[in-house]
Length: 112
Image (cartoon, rainbow, N blue to C red; front, side, top):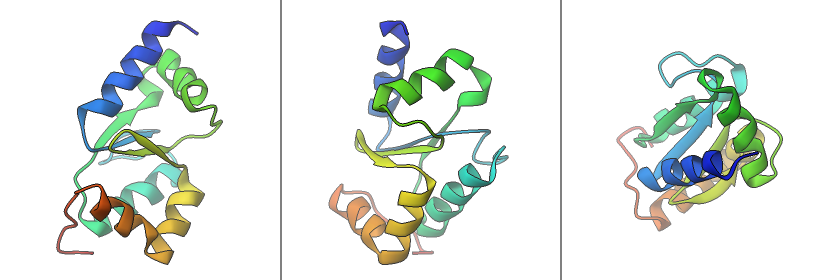
């Protein structure tokens, strides 16, 4: 894997406080796991940047290698890898995700 794709991924992660590498787009997720994470972030009222890995095969493989994490979606908060769908869902249900976002200085919206 070229270092340029890893540089691109690092730049994307740094570009916004909350970044979700996903299949599809926030408006039209292409898999149930991506849709679940989008729904959770929307429920919390958190603005986020969705990056469609299906649009770029190198990016799709690169993000898996970047974190040594085999599945997509992958959620980042302030550059920190949080996890995939199961981890995000569990931390949302426990209230931990809202706390992580708040601790990172991200305001939760009206839906939280």
